[in-house]
Structure formats: C-alpha cells, structure tokens
Length: 323
Image (cartoon, rainbow, N blue to C red; front, side, top):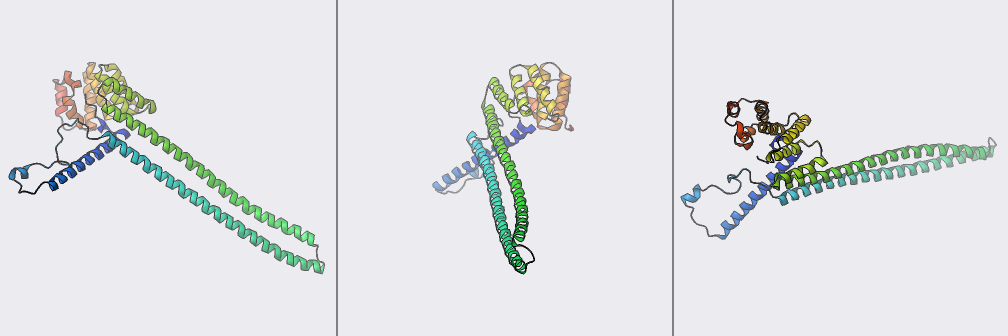
C-alpha cells in the first residue's frame, strides 16, 4: 500500500508539497552547479554526436522511482524555521508600529494639554485684570471673581483630561488585544511546526505500527485531522486490521464527506472484508474526485482479490467519471 497520498488535499499536504518542491529545486541547482564546475575544470573539446544526443541532467532528468523521497529533512526544517522567523518579524514590526503610534498620540495629548493650560492661564490673567478694574471701581469683590474663574478653569481642564484619558484607555485595550493575537499566533506556529515534524517522521517510518504511533500523536493535537485518520487507516490495513481501518475511514468521511483519500481507503477496507459492491462505489467516487486513483487502484495490492472482476475492470477502464 502506498503511503505518499497527500494529493487529496489538507493543510499538511499542501505544506509538504511546498517543501518537496523546494528540496527538488535545491537538488537541481546543486547538480547544475557541480556540472558547471566540472565543465570549467576540464579542457574544452569538440562534442561528439553521442554527447549531443545525451539527455541533460538535473531538472530535466526523468524520475526513475516515483516512491523515492524528493526532499531532505534538513531542507524542510530550514524552510519551516525561515517561515517561523518571517512571521515573528512581521508581528514584531506590527507591534513596533503600534508602540510608535501610541507614543506619538501621547506626545500630541501632552502638547494639547500644555496648550490648553497656557490658554487657561492667559484667560485667567485677562479675567484677573478685568476683575481688578471692576473691584477698583467697586462693582464686585476680587474673591468672588477668583472663585468663579477657578471653577471655569477646572471644569475646562477636567473635560480635556477626561477626553484624553478615554482615548488612552482605548489605545491600551487595543494593545492588549494585539498582544493576545501575537501569543495565539506564536502558539499556532509552534503547534504547526511540531505537526510538520511528526509528518516527516511518519514518512520516514517503515513499520505500520510505528506509523500508527506517530499518527496518534498528530490526532492528540488535532482530533479532527482527517488526513491523519486516513493514513492511520492505511497502516491498519497493512497490519490486517480491516474493521479498524473501515472505522477510521468512516470517521474521516463523517468529518469531511468530500475527502477522496478517505473514500479510497474505505474502498480498500471494504474489499478486504468482502463488501465488493460498496468498495466499487466508493472507489468510483474517489476516482471521480481525483483521477490519479484510477492508476493507483490498478496496481494496489488491496484490490488484488477483485482485480479480475468485471465491475473493477470497467471502473479502471472508464474515462467519463465525474465528481
């Protein structure tokens, strides 16, 4: 049974494909650089007709074994660390911009309060001069005028301070929300890195029991991960646990009814328990979603018992299946 079945979709599958592509390109560029260095070190000679007809190595070289891994765990780890550092730098830059904005607004508020204080003082001096003249002429007492001016100034300054206090409280609340988002993003990055490490470890395991242990670790972190369930069902089939594999496939289909990989695994499990009609129906649905399952089913040992059946042959030979 093939293990490399990430073509069916899902976040781990897409990220693993990105890492495989990066590793493949790195290997191609390395091979190209080595070939160029050897060409410079050797004396130039006239190419023969056999050399001209030889295929180019590197990117255009054919893949001999489609099941052989095209990536390096070290390259995958490097890419994950770069992505993690990039997201951390973006969040730090965002926090720095928010901090600068708060500092600028604080300075503006401070300057505005100073301007308001100077205006109130000037207004107080004018009122004092006017009231002095009024007292000089005997129209009112200086004490009453001073009390009145103090009340007006306190009311005005209090309203200004209260307004800026409300704005500062809103900014502080926004900063707290940003901090919570940063912490949540950091936790998500750590969890994603750990899950990717588990997927890499599962791809390197050769024993079905060891693979099941790794898939169980993934399901502990993400209980609704349908990819881990389907790959665990594949490993269970390799151990001969058909009912267990069928239960895992049914659970994955209940979560995601459009999961072609889960339908394919359920067809394999149903074949092993003798439910041929149900297996053919699930296999037809899976091929209608992902046509590559047609070729895989033709050589999959799980369908060895029904490979000579007319319904299976007709399904493999059909070209008009649609989702």
